Amino acid sequence: MQTLKGIVTINQVSTDVFTAEGLIRKHVSKDELIKEYATGRRDFSREEFESQMYLNGANLEGINLNDAKLNGACMIGANLKNASFRNANLKWMDFSNAKLQGADLHSAQLQNANLYGANLENANIPYASLENANLENANIPYASLENACLRRVSFKNANLRGANLKNANLEEVYFGYANLIDAEGLDTPNTIDNIKYAIFEHTQVTEKEKAIIADAILQGKFDVINSSTLRK
Image (tube, rainbow, N blue to C red):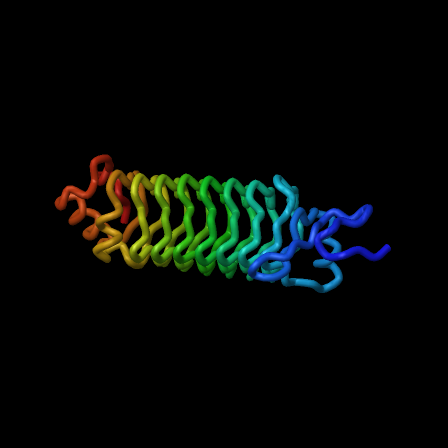
């Protein structure tokens, strides 16, 4: 049965819609995504997926979800290595224990997302919004978080070794028991200005980071901090 674009056929879940930016597919289901990925398709950019879609444990390595809408989806333990989520709407998503090594999350909307235990080694996350996100026990070494909004993020027990935090908004961030050794950008003016209310409790740092944080304390940048428990 042939139909015009924009009209849903019987047994068809997704809908093709013409917009000013071109053709966009809406209401894409989990089954459609998995089936098409299995046939070799990787580009799902700008598509809008069903709300609260469950993709736990799925293998989607290298998938392109730039500008896609996946808010509320679950990708617990999914393989998303080298996936691209540039400018994607990922609010309230559950990425806990997901494999996101080398993923591109530039300018992604990750507010209230759950990234507990996720592996974000070498991930590209500049200009992303992660306000209120959970990154406890996450592995984030050498990731770029430059200019990211990290307000009220919890990095408890997270590994941020060598991560780039240049000009990131660190207001009310919790770094308890986190590893900040060799983290970059803590000494940039915008980072220092946006670091108030951050908590460094039993945080692992080098003498360099400790001196930067101590200087910020002297400048009155912190209202709440337990600086005596910073660890070298």
